[in-house]
Length: 90
Image 1 (spheres, helix red, strand yellow):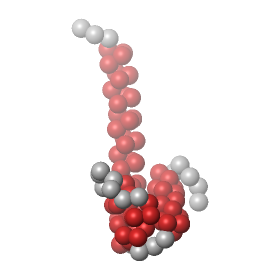
Image 2 (cartoon, helix red, strand yellow; image 1 turned 90 degrees about the vertical axis):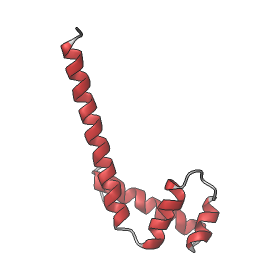
Image 3 (tube, helix red, strand yellow; image 1 turned 135 degrees about the horizontal axis):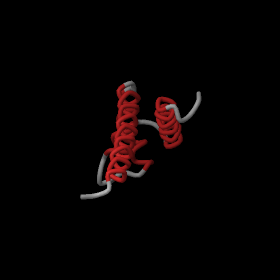
Image 4 (cartoon, one colour; image 1 turned 135 degrees about the vertical axis):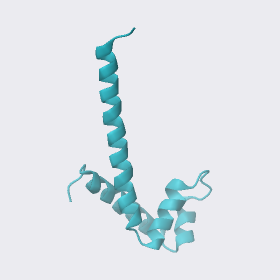
């Protein structure tokens, strides 16, 4: 009827993966909800819009900043998520 040890190991591994994914989603949600409107719009256009029709330059124009500012904002958002997850120290 199967290997009970293997089944238990699979369940434990799956539970750990699910918990990690839930932690990641929660961290992203916390950071995204704290963003000002223009940075939220950046995340929406750059990461959530599919198919992606705009280049980074187009996204920058759309939200009213230059491309370098867009990159700084992306870096800061990703860093904030990493800090929230405990993967990066401030």
